[in-house]
Image (cartoon, rainbow, N blue to C red):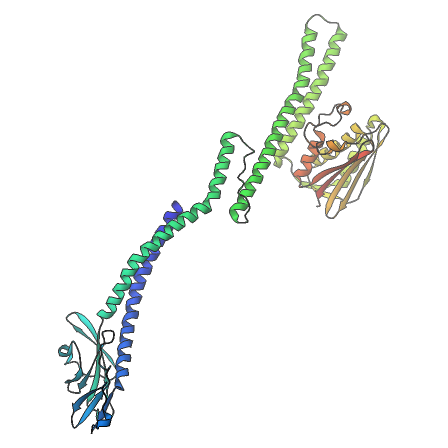
Length: 460
């Protein structure tokens, strides 16, 4: 409605200006047209008069007029002096005497002198008249003038007619334009209303599955609606992910807390031997460490998502970092698994040393956890097509195809029996860190043959 009102106001102003411009310019054009027609009429009648010193019978015809003039006769064409568009033409003597024709303001214009081929203006009773004279120069007609007279009222009547038509037509056109503008605006804004209604339904009803669904179309509003639908899909996915994360986190946190509470209740039921108290404290200590690690990892996720500025970027020598970390973790030899590395020299990346260390250590720890006893893990670092490529290959139990797409989800553990002290957040953190730097992580795996985890980061 607001668009229609603004549009209507602008249209009214534009039409009013157009109306006054048309009247102003139209009046000048019409008056000029009247003067031009006056000149053409008089000029055309100059050749319609002939002088005969002697009028013979064969010179006579039934359609012309013959007037006695001096010693001879004047032959005047039959359509001469007819009123044409209210232009009157008269044949006058040089002393002002009317010889032939008519002039409705003859008396008022008798004192107006003749000016050859010039337009004169005279006001009679408040009305402006245009006068145009032509001197006849043919032999025998030297003392005669043709005088044309026309009133400006002829143009005003035409202008009044135009004005009346405009006053009727313009409001009709305005009404059509306003109604059409309202319908067009409603049609154009309908998708926006649809977007607003859908967003409102999602906000009030918590129905994240609701979509705008405008259908096919390549205009800006259809593109906007599709972007909103994709955003709603991302919101739904994120909401479901967060719900799952909260549920899994609650479950993971509940387990060590329950163990600690149960152990405390059991120990405090009666007097215990020192060895029993020590055993209980060992259980509480282990569960407390597990709880602490879990909380610490969850805090790391929160910081990475909510406080990315915490991790300041610097130019990291990935070659040195990888070699140093691999050297340290090779000493672990969990399950007698050996660790080797093949690292390209001079690989640099602009990032956080803490996050990159966490990424690589999580991949190596995962390889240790799921590797084959007395097996082998290899770390490879190289640059490829302006990307930094970091891969960790093991010869462990591998991953089932149905688990491949899930292993990067938070708290997901493909083989619980092999997790040990794991909490299902290691690979999820790897994916989070890679995505934080605009990179990707992927896995290639085959059951009982091992896995290759590959991280690609934009090159420095």
